[in-house]
Length: 442
Image (cartoon, rainbow, N blue to C red; front, side, top):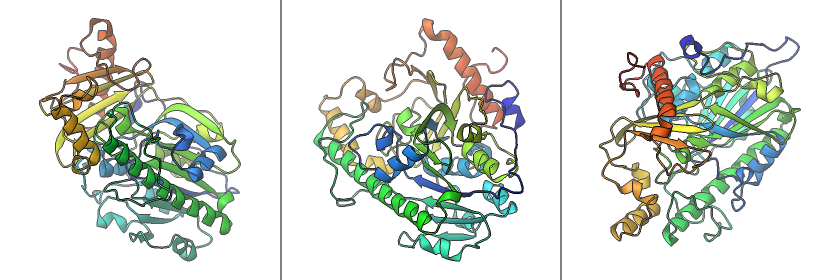
């Protein structure tokens, strides 16, 4: 996969710098929420959501303002977190596809480096894959202390906590006191109805419940005397489970939180750089002093964490394929622009099954039947979509005004289509390229 950097578009991977023999590899704790957009944490500006433990983690460490998933779907993006390669490269692009047994993951490399590996709850790479961990508990009632009780004391550890919050379905009383429905964050891409506010309130309650469990884990690290030797990562597998977010390549489906606490490093740092989820395994291996994965498409951002230097990415890429319906989409996002390639534009928007049964989608459809949807909200109920969408994120952060086909944006459209087509070719995508005539006429 070295071809991914031959033109400098993804940047040059950070130099491999194993720790000195006197410095043992750090423990790594990885926390991952389920269906959770970046904007829905207090430290990302949502002042009405109750996330004190994660907010404190951000205050003590680093917050990444622009972290994006490789897929707005659960198991495809999680496969990228293990292999460092986008899902179509490893034949895991369909929801629930198990990780192929021949694919090497960062777990294998960490074990070779002497790590003890553990996981709780959701991994979503198939039953066989769960056995790659030295320790695994699927039961949500299993004690987090059990991992620390049985781990070999002299080995560094990697512990994966796969929360299932705030994934649907939602029920009342997940968190007390419940969030005030009148004060929940109402994204601009959703209409304002009592039903949608109730749904958003339930979503916030489930995030708060997950935050409380993060607090339990942080307290446990301190109680076991491990806090000073453990680097903590928190992110989400994809965006919020609402129409126009999860399952789409709009930012609410792709933009997720990323918090990192490295004991002894400067607190309260905010990094604006583009980060892709394929960069996480590269970073973990770099921290552990282990070599990069054979199919790695990501690059370590350790240099951002320890101040040793970092060459920023120019773009991040994402894909959407089969969930419980087939909707092949590819996207490229720079700091300024987003291009979305809808490979089957004749399909209307079709929410995933858990969204289709939600209060929000039912309210959305009721407004559509009554002719009460605004122009920007009406796009999700159209019979088809454009093949190409382009957004200027500086002027239109909500991605409401499609600039594709406009003469004044022709140059940026051609540039982004070429770069997306190049990425698709180099990562062995099964879709036709996003640029017409690629590569002969471009």
